Length: 214
Image (cartoon, rainbow, N blue to C red):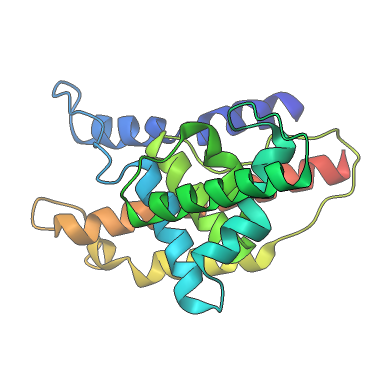
């Protein structure tokens, strides 16, 4: 059972596997390139950050001063700073706050070293879809690594139900009982995305069951 799960986990984790399999179903000879992402990673992170600000009372200044900048300091993810006094630390913190604002406005490049610290500061409502988009750009699913068997795990049937309902809502290409060149490429793309999301949710649930029951 463990070996079967390990194989299933590897196959489902590789999102590009599904693109390859979809292409193989259509032709055994023609080779098509993996779709090129239309967004960069920094654009994805900034999008969800700004979405959070627009839907709440949070602002760039508050985000920088209360969350991101202190975390960068704690993790040592910024250039080394010798802040011997509280005043020096506050000056550094203020300068970083200005830099964060410029990054959000797009007038300064997003520092790569900040990426996961920045994402960790986002509320779960925005962090989860942000992670999923970033991992999709890399061609993998957002599936946690397996933990030790026998450890209690959380069932998430509601996610499976939601993902399945979204597959049904996007299933226009399948409604006539066949897939062919007459199907809308846009609708088919949405349908494939929802199917992959369902597969991801199913593997996460399979992992939870295996972990929890041993």
